[in-house]
Image (spheres, helix red, strand yellow):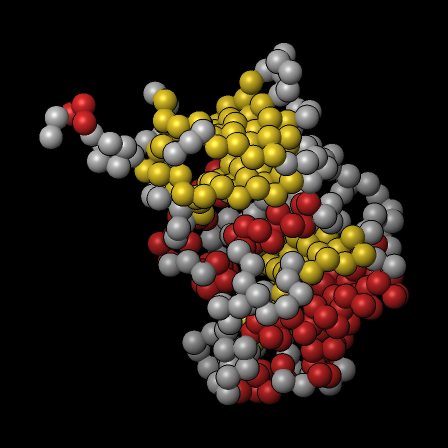
Amino acid sequence: MGALARTHAESGLARVTDVERYGADDSARVVVHVSRKVPFRVGAFEPDGPLPRVFVDLLDATVDGPIEGHLSGLVRRVRLNPAGEDGARVVLELVRPAEPRVFYLLEPFRLVIDVSGRRDDASVPGRRRVERVVLDPGHGGHDPGAIGPSGLREKDVTLDIAHRAAPILAQELGVTTLLTRDVDAFVPLHERIARANGFNADLFISIHCNASEARGGEGVMTFVFDTAREEVAERIAERENGASRAAAAELLDVLGRVSGSRNQAASLHFAGLLQRAAMSSLGNGYPDIPNGGVKQAGFYVLAGASMPAVLFETSFISSERGEARFGTEDFRQKLADAIVNAVRAYRAGI
Ligand SMILES: [Zn+2]
């Protein structure tokens, strides 16, 4: 076969297989699925044309198309152009200038393009604005999460805790709550924060149960997004990210280079309040549960949050005693109460 007859597939170019778009007034997330890992380059056009634009070139990739899709809010239109000299180009047309943040996820390879036009007001002293809270029950659908020795599934426990916390947040604090899933359904990790950004949430709380191969794992921990390498944190990140050790390590490395969470201090502060509220709530009935403290790890689900965001490991489901506790309404209610109390304290400026 002559070189001129070669098709894209034969030439070894990766293919764009899907594009997901999530738009909101102040933010948007575009997720580009590519058949294999490719290098990429981010750029922006000066806003002298009709609309400011952000683009990402996927080197060594092509797309059947052009493809275009419309969004409302900050991003008006997303376009994909087939391979030029620089590969396939993804263009986001914005209604006003905004900062892009681009990172990728592995297994399968996806490029995540976040744009945010939201001002960071988390440093305003005194009472904090908390009108909307997103609760993110971990796992769901075909992903059960951790499973206890007798078969209790993390995905069911986390959904129940969220269902207990949401009405109390509404009734006692007047806070509007969005659940990233309301039923036993699979929601991709990258979609969870996209929904929170789209909801203009003031807080994002991902709810999980911990697991350990070692016997006797116990304790409550709250994580904030960071790529600091702490062995325990890395192991949990690997499990919660649903990725292999190699992919988790690479993710930490990649996110380390694009980090700079604007809400890091507020996330750490809220995590401290949540730990305190959890120990206080569980102290009445379960005083032996250790305080595992606030930790930092590279969780996909928190990446790209435009609000303070934490991942709450409500304690271990992998031990017989831990599973038995999660099986009681009392224990799950105390964890839901802890979430409510932490939001109350955070809003009060504590
Ligand atoms: Zn989990």
